[in-house]
Length: 498
Image 1 (cartoon, rainbow, N blue to C red):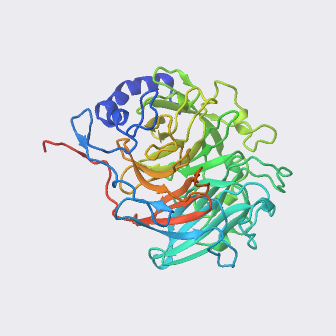
Image 2: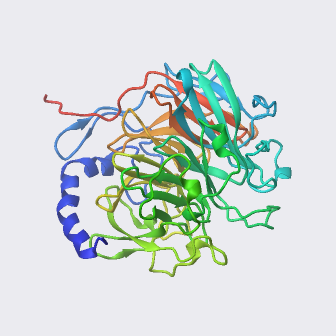
Image 3: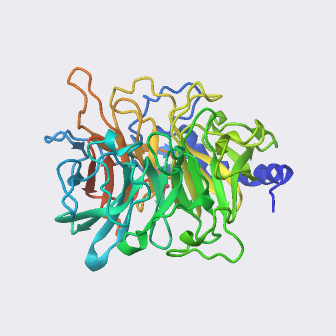
């Protein structure tokens, strides 16, 4: 059933105001580190959580974060006091079980329970174009290759204890530009190709721009890789599965025009599970793009127009005409006014009964500028709420401010943990449930020069199944890290008079 604009306007007149009065939105709008005001420069209050924040109910949020980041003598990762890290894989240093070196360009990652207390990590390698362009492509493991011309794919990393034993093998090879993806409720990984290359382009021998499934528990399940064509062919970024309703949500990281947020509805009678996606036909189910409107029923053409955390949009879904984009890219198949766009739609994660979605930044190609948004889509209400907004960072080379959120995960300690892919200094940072942000780690591995330092993006942020270890990657030169320390609940509200 379509949620009408009138219904949405009526609903937000009551529930939207209720949210604000409950304090959630009020704290978000004023919290240090949640840079919501027009013209915010991204440098003020970037360390969030210094002092308490009062909400509309007179309750206070305890300080968030773990304190300042301490320089690393090894020059890799600055962490708060009491935290430590271990390098699990490193491109050109560590080796796979087959003897080849760990591939480069670490990206999206998810963690799964392995046998005998181990953790299995599926790690994307964002390698675009032909294999000849890369020193360390994903090895062409027998039976696991989609396109032998392509350099990308996934590896599976088995970790025992706190990283005392690490083994790595190929999960899928011959795919391209494996950026993010998402874990499934049935324990597999969906890896996304962020490209639209067809056979004959950039040396490819097959069409690309698809989603593939990787099973970390069963190496045989990945033999003869098949794209899930039902999810469409475009510059895929991330994917999330709604276990209750069966919907699959997907983001598109593209420009000219900006990308879209998609929903795939399974065909009648389909039941998700291991190996089931391989059985789908190319036209199975319904692929749709989102269309937003505000509480007054006005169409919203681009998510960048939202300038205040707590903004709520209603969402409708519009059918994609040609999901395999045989002649026209999917995002170009819609006329202005049909769908809502957003620049740099990046990571997603399921939590709190819905989908957290990142829009990394917006510049001149968008109607307004920002340096990061985190939205929450509520499938039951069919509403999209802006949870975190980062103002334009005018001093990206100075430590403290955050910009360019990318991969994201819901933290077992409350709120979100976000991997930064911005300008200048790069962080892992947290966003508490009230919107305040705080640093968790800083990349100190300079791949530039002393005079012109350069720091690669963080990626693949995910917690171990037991919540004790935070895994993350540094894309260049290619590291997978395990971070441990005194994790604790963030952003609890308290009454100072209690």
